[in-house]
Length: 417
Image (cartoon, rainbow, N blue to C red):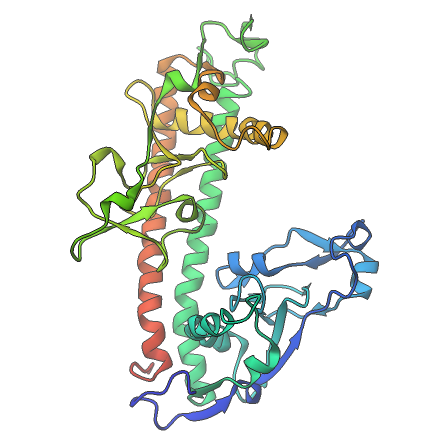
């Protein structure tokens, strides 16, 4: 089967993918794969299928390193190698930003210089990913092998036109990556400022100096068992905000073309996709979320985020958090900071606590700064949050344009001059 046969690319060359470059499996011979000796004092970057799935275009970071022993049973792949997952997360691809090792659940592709490029082939695999995943789903354990990949047939233009196609698509992906990097910096700045004021208690005193560091009066609080600034209150997370739980949206299926994407924990983690379920827009208003809403997943996977994927229908097991009394930045960061404690509780009580209840929120006490301070902080953080949402919206538009262009560029319907 030719994966991109079209009336628009009749003059392109039909190739087996093996004619465009070399395919080689990664190496991880040692068993067990997670033997600590493979990683002890490691310095050789090591990635797995999840790292490839999470990457945008390039794999920019790694979370593990092989030791000398780990390297002996593996292999280092050079920068710009195209990584293709063949097990677990099948047919995900990304390029190495710098040399790394990877296991045999990943295939490394290196293009023949005059035939193609790793960058162009990344977009070829993006285009044919669903076809590959569909073929793999018939096996007992979803996976594919190198023979399957190398025998795939694809029509390709000449190398200069391949490069033009890759340039257009990668320009969009690189802008998305830059926006993500900017957002990560903005989020880090916002949290550092918040923690400096309300965790370290070095908000500006009446003279504009850091409160605690300048000797501001601290008072011991019996509930928290620690000192807090004089004049601050103590309340529970339950007292500072409203927690609306999403709905069982099976009851609200769309009856016509209008719909809202159903926001489950998967969408919180991975964003809206073609696999996202749909709900009628005619649902209770409280269950509709939009950019800027605070979401708190309280079951199984515990997380807090500022939603940034547009309007959606909130599924059960996720709270939409609001407050009439306190600014958004306050209850967002207080929930975020308490999340570590909730996760630790969940880890210690795996058999008895798989989720956060109202009682847990009522028992989660925090210190409450004076409202004037909270409003000053909100005014400082709101422009950062707004910029973050603007960049996320721009990324959605860029991704939509990229995904619209991809099939037309790959079948010759659209050409790049």
